[in-house]
Amino acid sequence: MPIVSDISFDLTTIWAFIIAFAVLVYVVLDGFDLGIGILFAAERERDDRDVMMNSVAPVWDGNETWLVLGGGGLFAAFPLAYSIALPALYAPLIAMLLALVFRGVAFEFRWKAKTGRWLWDYAFIAGSTLAAFAQGVALGALLQGVEVNEAQRAYAGGWWDWLSPFSIFVGIAVVVGYMLLGATWLVMKTSGPLQERMRTRAWHLGIATVIFIGSVSIWSPMLQDGYFARWFEGWHVLWAVAVAAVVLALAWFLFRALHVHRHDHWPFLSALGLFVVSFIGLGLTMYPYIIPTEITIYEAAAPRASQIFMLVGAGVLIPVILGYTAYAYYVFRGKIDVDTGYH
Image 1 (cartoon, one colour):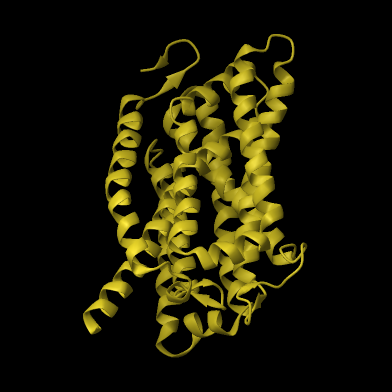
Image 2: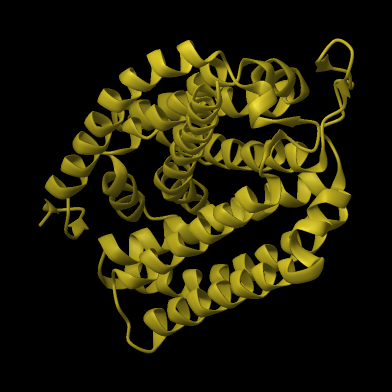
């Protein structure tokens, strides 16, 4: 029996890591994609907008694979958490999915439209902005806590519980962060005046993103007693100091890469680093809860046999997705312009 218990614990932790990994990959891959859509509003020239869209055209529609993997994995591996979180977040999640669909339609129709291209441009901007904002709102609503009926193990809150100053603030923070990813991606993929404008925008967005990271990091421990203890009681304060130091180091590297060394690739990698470190901090804040601070990953886990069965499929599927994703980015590496495409 002790051996079985150990294996069950390991499987639960592995599945929590798989879902977290899928969500993280979605955020960093679709983040710059959505950020470009939001930045569309600041560019008026048709050629510049064409270049911006073409920079992500070969890869954008594969990013939602990771979103499906994360959502499907949550449903299969942690069904109790899925049944509680989904009703609590219906409104922002439905808004996000509708925005992603509308944005995808706008992406395709824009190239075919002759007289109404401006309409699809606005649809692309609106879909990208709403999707990013809804993701942040859902994250903020989950972090602030979900009311759970202990007897029925079900969501006990109301339709509007997700709406709060904190969730709105996190929604805006995600929009700004995605814009930073989009700007640094375009610094890496473009040249000339468009690149220089994005370099300047990335500088300002980098400052805003660091401020938002700091603000959320200070605000979130005040939401739950468990969060505060995790970061600021006893030796745990060392975690807070370490994460803050890494964020500041990445920010310093980002700004130097943008305007001192004027690198093309390092600003984007630095921005990705800020997202990865923030995501790790989020994981440390929530662990071992999957519904803060009500349901742990062990309480929400599917039966051991189900976890093993799904792990076999995930062991085959995830390397395949990683492989074709990496290959797509490799094939379409390099700069892009309106006349010659990739070169």
